[in-house]
Length: 245
Image (cartoon, rainbow, N blue to C red; front, side, top):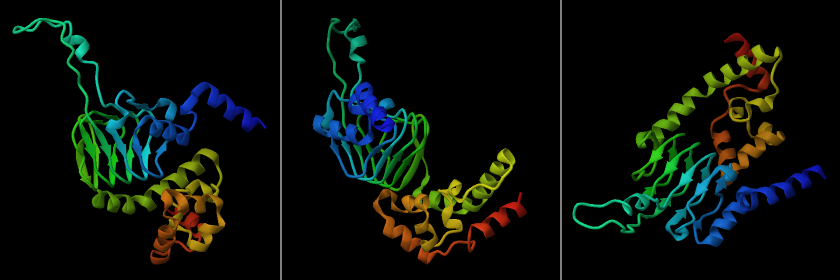
């Protein structure tokens, strides 16, 4: 009952921004082309320029996080309108608009601003706090102001793959130092492939949910079958963590 009340209140207070799907539906109705499995993780803090909604295209499997702004126009003409240029008279209204195109399988980090006349390719990661003023090619990681290519996605994949065990051990030992006890398996919901095979993962509601994310659960299961976990189970993983404080 309490959950239903909270949902109703969110709808009243936030309107079309009360949920990701509601916001997607709203933007589609406005004229934006938006693909499947697009998530706005914080719709209430997201700014999607609605002045020229048909100028925005978003592909499939796109993740847009807190504070992201997609801007297809600006109001710079308000300054130019009162400017008296050397060769003319003040008062001109000089519009500024352009498209934004986002490909498939894209992640846009917190507080990123995407300016007009920008195309973001497919398989792209945009780092938090970036200002995207130029095109981002396929299969790349971009960050900065203005956003620049940091590395190819293949190199980033290898980097993240190599960091899994070290990060998981640090996570485990930090938890133990803070709480004085062994963490539950579900704490490692993003590192479970270190110690869970397919059958073990499917027995956990948390791990199986992670497997199903991004609409490619079968591929995740196939990955685990082809890449057995480093540890036979969670107990073996925890013992390794204790030995490597």
